[in-house]
Length: 268
Image 1 (cartoon, rainbow, N blue to C red):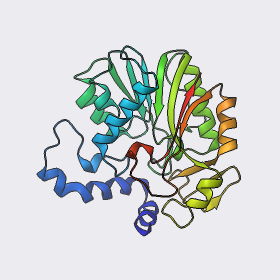
Image 2 (tube, rainbow, N blue to C red):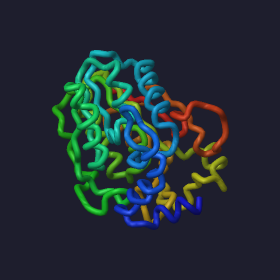
Image 3 (tube, helix red, strand yellow):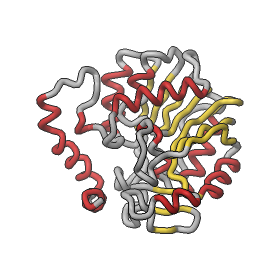
Image 4 (spheres, helix red, strand yellow):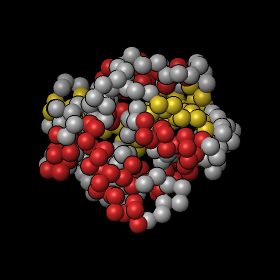
């Protein structure tokens, strides 16, 4: 917890430098065989390869088909795209606010799979980008009714309400009728409010309908009151089709690492 606070205290640009240095010896000594260097991965510390495979399997269980058009909101550095490239024959679009991740994906995935496209969007985010476009006003660069499936893994957990509302509305706009969005959240309800106390993920800074882990870095981690989040979802024209409660608040259990955050699959 102390290391996390020190990390958040650094300027956004230095956070990438620290991670790069942390994994530099390992990246020099080990060949990654088509995977990004550990020092470039900014999507958490859990098993990058295993999570990607399990997410893709989950999407297919929820209704994704090989020929579908797929939108990866916050595509990162290819955690979803790498395993999905082995199965998806339809169009893939991914966008992310971190140029390092987009550049790596363009060079290592898109060149081999021309139906995969990655877009860099310089969005402001006080965890990663000190300046940029307001995510609350950003319009996804895709036509209405373009995709059968979309995902936003560990995206809404870094967005404040105005940004979350906009992203939900944009996702609904670009999804086809009956299309699905699988997204992860930190959801506050009676159970999580009790079990999170004293853990690493204790959202102590209350802001009404949502809470922050760090009041100085709002995008570090954001949790939403369940009723409020479900209202935002409904306002966007989406409906909750399925939900899985994550183990983030208790930090216990031997469940799949993709079930750390709460998972909602929404349908248009």
